[in-house]
Image (cartoon, rainbow, N blue to C red; front, side, top):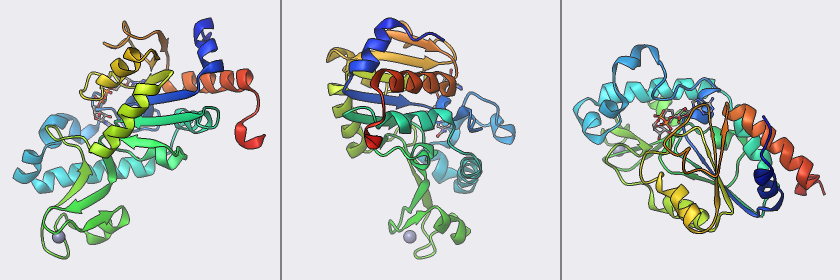
Length: 252
Ligand code: NAD
Ligand code: ZN
């Protein structure tokens, strides 16, 4: 893949960078997107599991689905795309990863400035007493009922019909409003309100670079559309940044 001239200029001069990521960036870590096959669960639609109503009407089923997804994410590792973003963070004055993923992989890879728009599968809390069950606590508890009050324990995830966490959304919106460039990686970017972020970037004069294996509704809107897997494309981008900007700041 050749990185277009215009994009090279941006990589060489940008100060303020935002990366919006979706399920596609984790596909190469073995975490299926909702459109991918996922054995047993492929018969059930995420929309029918990932809602408060679904949880209340069948907490056992919904909890099992999250437990299944938690096992997949724990067994997977960040891939070259996550790692490239960790590297990129060193080259720009401001660098924000805004993710719709709940898989914790950006954090595990080592990205520092992350806005998690849809929550994180490793965090859970009791609906009754708000006791938090993080990671291993939840497993040790061995039930979706709270050990303290018997209430239902839900994942700290944004379900269909729920509001995004205001603090995370603020970080994302503020970053988008000042970004010189936004990379949109592995997301069809059609789910609102995240889909508004590229519009915000554009309105304030920033550029949009799409990274996806296929065309999406955003492709026509993007300034640059790089077709390929997130790991291949972002590896090339970080190599180019290194070439254009020299040694990383932390090794200077
Ligand atoms: P989506 O609509 O964002 O679709 C995934 C996108 O990734 C598609 O556009 C696809 O073309 C692209 N893609 C697939 N493999 C890729 C690769 N290797 N490199 C680059 N792009 C690739 O997401 P969805 O799967 O419909 O999920 C909907 C919602 O559920 C989102 O909020 C999503 O983040 C969340 N979800 C999260 C996870 C996770 O945390 N890993 C997994 C599934 C779904
Ligand atoms: Zn409780």
